[in-house]
Length: 411
Image (cartoon, rainbow, N blue to C red; front, side, top):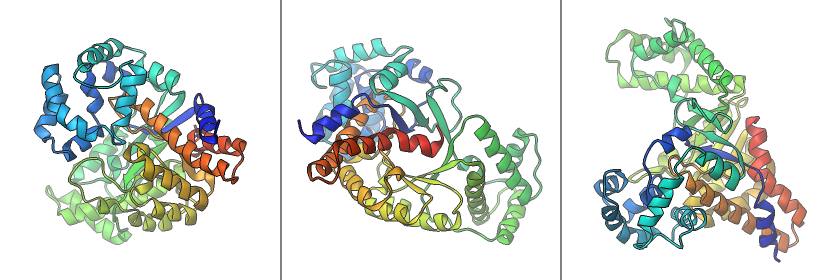
């Protein structure tokens, strides 16, 4: 048996930290109808639309009231165009390995829908995530703290909940929610500090940002912008933007003080018609240089700029590399990224998996399998070349899938 197969066997029941999801409480899944075409929600829609499915057709595909036969007719021609891509592999893996059908086709979509509906019951998270995937915790981002499943779901919250300001009442409302008042920029910074402290007390382990060119205004300029935003019913967009930028950088410092990890979306954007150069990792270099006491978890290998990300994490002690979403973007790019990163950065800074799904929990299983394939392919080649022992490779895989994210987020 070759090193690849031995590594796959070693990872088969390895405990995993799922380092990025958008999973809500289980009741949001079980309280809504599902069918075979639920598996086309989330990322697969990007490929369907790229293959020329209209947005209107996709909405019909996901509408509960659309008859199953019509749904199949809508998706069938596009399914043949996208089914061999990385986005679609978790669909096919779920159909085969979780539900027992050879593939999704004209003969199986109806019975598959029936089986999925039968399984859409309380306990689907434990069965799919814990029992099948051996996942101990999921870091989830749903814009709020989950109200259930807290033994599984560990929240991160968007920085925009405090940093994004368009009108003065947003700041006064946020202060009031904490039994505080705000009449100056310094007071609002304290509101943010108190709010983020409350987040941490409620089990939040990090905050989320999106890579962008966000200059850091001077305190004087920010104070002037604050006064005008508070005074005017319709503040100038430039004042709101400058104030929000200042608050963003203040939040980065506060996150460091509180021990909250700053997770950053970099590179490829999930839906269609985007200028993904706006999220190039070069934009976060000024953040990293200015906020050296804050720890950053950099997402998605900044695909397609995974080489840039590796160099960035090599030079910045407080930057980590997270392969969430990567394996379903492209397995070949993911393998290239991981191979380069092992050469470039300390291996404790590499996080190997995050499913990045919401409603289609079944696809986590397939995505994790793909991640294991990629890790086994990269490490297996190194074992075969004599660069690693099999024992060392297994230890690295355990670090990527469990020890590294656990340590980074203090789980």
